[in-house]
Length: 492
Image (cartoon, rainbow, N blue to C red; front, side, top):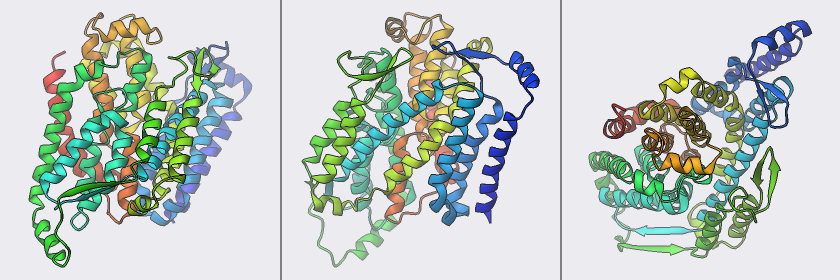
């Protein structure tokens, strides 16, 4: 019944869009006179999106949150088509009513880059079997999370998450709880990746704009260490409180051989494929002229990078160690779920991002810009929108407020070097807000949903969208985020 109601809502959205097209020509002309217009690089005017155009994005978020809980059969069967329909509606609105092809083209390019990277890392890491033959103790779990926070800066939060989530689950196979997975998302899939541009997509976009590679290590190191230590301490306290399950687990394993205390690997060759995917990240035609790209409005869109990533995924799957794949219980379902849901997220969030960007660059928005507002603004929106475009929008607004242009690399470098008023703190606030708050919801960062999907695939009952926020993000993650703000940004 609920599923039919939601389908009816989709149809109503179509009717609203269709009704908008029936507005009399004179009324449309009068309306156009009162609307702000953008002029794209090709000279064509395009209107700003109406506030109601955010509705498909909100509807998708609500369905992601409520579907698995209240109408799971309908949701698991229908989420691909729902996501595509909502994306199609927003794209239709942009192309035929706002006459704006710029935003859909850029969203499509960003989605292809996003899913190619995730697919490459997911498949390559799926062929690497890490066998941790140790007794599951809080300290062992703590060390795995700490190691994940470090290597997330070398192979990205997605790569580290896909490499470690399965051995982490296997180690705790008889006592695994949802909090194990949630803290994994907090530490490995998000906060850990704030030290290098490879670590998280927002930081990589900043690197492409001109922020020096070493900037994140130098300026994010202390906040990274504080946040990771606090989260690790919280996790250790949770795990110690759950120690009664250790005794139960040992009782269940009395007939099994005691652990040898060793760590072994199968599928080492897949590290080469993983390296290919990470190396391909840097093949950007806007940075290296020799890299081919598709030119559009003065910008080059990469395709060689994405082809290499997908070929690496194919190669790693074809030549993976079968025992490693079977040991990991490898399945394409997690990446399939992410691929379909993020089609909807990338395209339906276009109006929300554009309206936020418009306000941030308006006189009222610029008057509010400062390290504190940038930290919380970038952060909150990164938790519910994709954190990469949110990062770029707030970086653009912050630089514009001091007369700098985000599209001029020398000015970006100067901004990162604190040559504008408070620009160093502003950039720190935007960077930490985008990465740290990405853990606040399942959709804040790509690896979150993949880790959740892998956990559910092996039978772990994960909290719902809202339960994740209420039970974990607000009481555990939010205090850490407030402490970071108090130390680095309060009073500025």
